[in-house]
Image 1 (cartoon, rainbow, N blue to C red):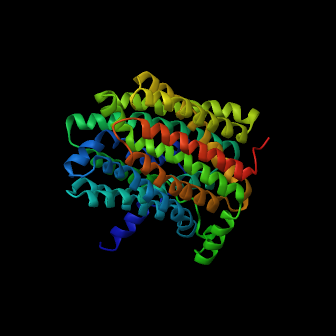
Image 2: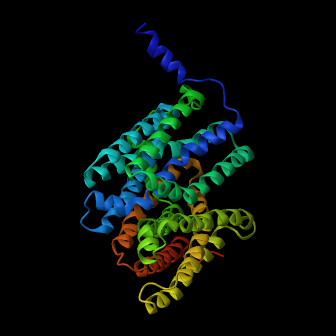
Length: 412
């Protein structure tokens, strides 16, 4: 009997039959959305967390966001190579285990330092489902079929940031902030069981590659030797820094500067949907105009609107009318939606022969580039939107200069 249980348990998590398309797409969207949900559902609770855990500087509560991104950046660079060696499912299982441990730590702690350890583990654990989930699609599909699956998955993924703050806000109406971590833990357990019981392993043993640290280091250096990848990676890092600065300060800006109260989730969702709308528009324009054209114009628009808006912000002592702020924010985030996919695609152009490692390097290091700048914007919050607008202006100008360096001048 003692030997039968582990055998039965192992068989339960080793299904052989491929999933129907609808279930496969639903599972994949569920898996890759956990990172976005873990970030955005926490936003309404940042102030309360800071108070309950006795954070000395209210701005330090923003580390709940930044530290998770730090863990995610490290997880990205590890997840791909590990899954190529040990298979997709074991690494995803390990990721969910680490994520669940992080949720437990954050849920029960009375210490802000332990909270940050938990958030780091959540970011580290969220990386394998996010990164390897896309590899699972690549294992079984290609061409138009893969594009079709990913378009549906990303459409669902885009909706998560729009509704996640409302979920967090709703929980705070009936429970305290610890219940948000309980929800994240429950979602991770459901994803673990659903994935384990229903999804077959897609990387067969014969196709796996042994991990070689020397080979990984050589590939890492080779990837960074390409100016196009390095340049657009840094550019994406500057753009991500603006996004992180916004995420860090969104709760304070909306609720403290503008006093929107529980409507924070609604306004945040409207801005998040701007990214989704831009993604749809980009899919139509990129074929006709090209990725470089769209990236340069998008960054110029962000920089231009920020340069024009900053004097207005200063004239209103850092708190212009709410409609002005929302209009500026909508334009900026619409441009963000045009940028992220195109910057990624441009960076990958010279590394088709090592796309997996190149993608991991791009994703991890662009996040690393953005974290300190995003944290600086958040730490500078002073009860106005001046640091946010000035930060977007400086970062977009830096991104523009990076493209000039990358392309040795503006590409035609």
